[in-house]
Length: 161
Image (cartoon, rainbow, N blue to C red):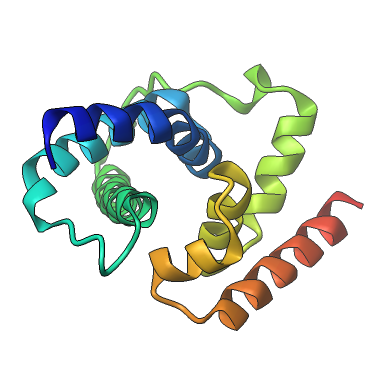
C-alpha cells in the first residue's frame, strides 16, 4: 500500500469508523484513541493486506474490532485491580447525570445485549456496514449475523418499550 492509498483509505473510512467506535464505546475520547491505533496498525502492517482475501473496509474494521477487544480486556483487568485496592481511587470519568435521558436509556438497552449482539449492532448501525460485510469482519455466516442483529433489536425494543 502506497502513501496515496493510505491517504485515500483514511479519507474514505475514518469518519464512519469513528462513528462505529463512538457507538461501540460510548466515549468519544476512547473511540478517537482506538481510531488512531487502528490507522497506526494499518501503516505498520499494510504489506500484509491482500485484496483477494477481503476488501480494505473489512480489513480495516477487523483491525479496529481487534483493538477494541484488546482495549476492553485491558479495561476489565484495570477494574479488577481497582476493586482489590483497599482505598477508593478517584475517577475523572463523567457521571451518568451528565448524559441526556434518552442516551442513558439507549446505553442501558445496549448493555442488556450479549457481547456478540453488541458487536453486530455496533458494526451495523455505528459503522453502517452491511450484514455480509459484518459477516466477513467477524468471520461468521450471514445467517448468524442476521440472527444476532434481529435478537439484539428485539431485546432493545423490549427494553425501551
